[in-house]
Image (tube, rainbow, N blue to C red; front, side, top):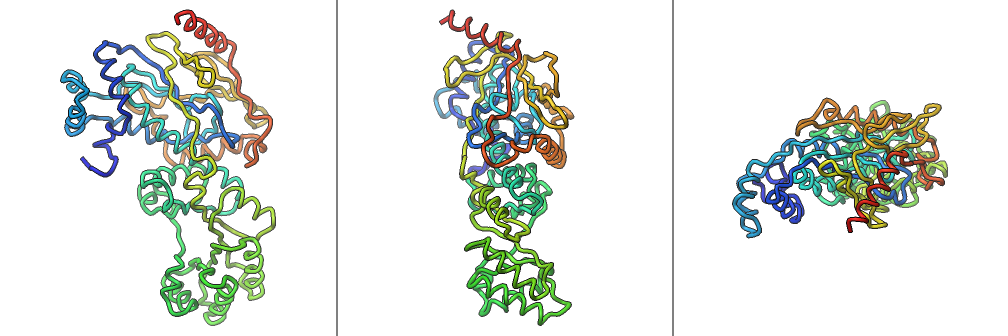
Length: 451
């Protein structure tokens, strides 16, 4: 087992201790009836929607979940677990079903992103990993979709891996960003694993390592035709003029495709750079901008008329700096055929199995209804079975390309005001069906009487 890396061999230990103590309690009490758990988000924060993501990761986890000999030995060393339970762990498998929204689907408060249906111990134990992955990847995809919405048709590249919280996050985020519509990533491992286009320019250190900026430009472009050169190592506009000088010296052999601005007043520098390049006849040389960008900075640059053709977005997107967490939850909604719920006023959840229907009018999403499972409501049902008896269904095997295309179509179907980066008022409409309202009231009454 790897000691410093989460992999298929040790991921069973990637859990909170209380998941194991509850699992042992269920085991000894003989509690193995079917349970339903919902994973959802209570509030959107500074967002108009969330973009569901992370399903592929959790389905792989559920299919391959095992306790290795080394994992069982470690759990035994905690002196909290007895021999019969440890023997049970050696044969532990997830045998349940999962119903989920497709990756790339816009979701809203209280709507199940997924439902896990299975023996209560199995369905409870997986909570930590599912929350960890769905929460982060959904949040990352949402942030990236806002960046892409702000950039419009301009190219956007993911430059964020060096400041993300760990290697796993950088891989998962690159995938989420691609689903959300980003064009490429600087993350080579993500490119290898996922087939995402990789991109990159050069670091300022390369320029600094040469005795002269122009010499560095010439050397790099001779090795990498149609490269993008970073021009702000010393004086940005002087760097642009050196590109012009190189073009004059090279004639038809000039092959630089763009320049990158990484600091300073990007809007003004882009305007000045464009003027210098155009006056030299270099109208085809694109301007690429990076450096502490997010959807708000990009929107401001575009609104100001800055002639920028593409953006590299790193830290603020990679760390989801403005909203680094979601108010996500994983709650029991049914056990042994009986609806269950939490009664805390600020943390109430909807009881029983559910379905979400999205009404479409004139080609646009026109509101959602959270309904009782099995109800027939106008609109498109969003939860589909992606796992049955611990194995993926066909719906659980969709490709990354399919997820990206679904996200594009789904976002295009949202009314324009919800796709914007400013908070829309009123919010997107989500209501409960009459049957679900009745179940909610009935379950609340039953639980209050039992107290």
